[in-house]
Length: 226
Image (cartoon, rainbow, N blue to C red; front, top):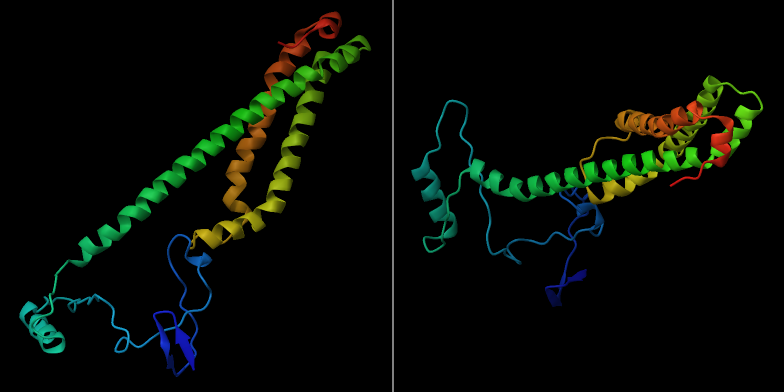
């Protein structure tokens, strides 16, 4: 026996226990995991939807459907007819709107990440100019200076990608709890983005490293970043 929120006086007899159906929609996974199903005869809903689909090659008999509804619900119950395509279109509108804004946010975050990574790598190379000047003064060639910077930049990019791949499954599960229906996590989903960020990391270091390789040791030692 249980009591429900809309009927705090009467007790209800539990007649069965079933598995809860998966809840579709944004944020549905955050709802309580258990549901109490009540008889529609005891707790009628204000409105119901009846979907009528014809068999292949046949049309819906509107007169028959109208008579069946009148006999079941009574002649005084208002009935509003809406096509299935129109009903689905109305339900898709908010989902499509949300999907577009999620796309915009995702691309904006990617742009911020790539721009920030590019700028950060440039500042990092500028901070190494004194070390690079000492290496040039000790006999390092321009190609060695360029290779050293790019090798370190590639290491930073690969290390960052490895950390991201390690944290990604847990973050993906959190996103799935709010947005059901996402594809199953796999490294292939983020491989193109990881490759992009590694490329940006190397590119951000390439330009200042190239300029540093063309400078004399004395100029490198006396250089002050803007």
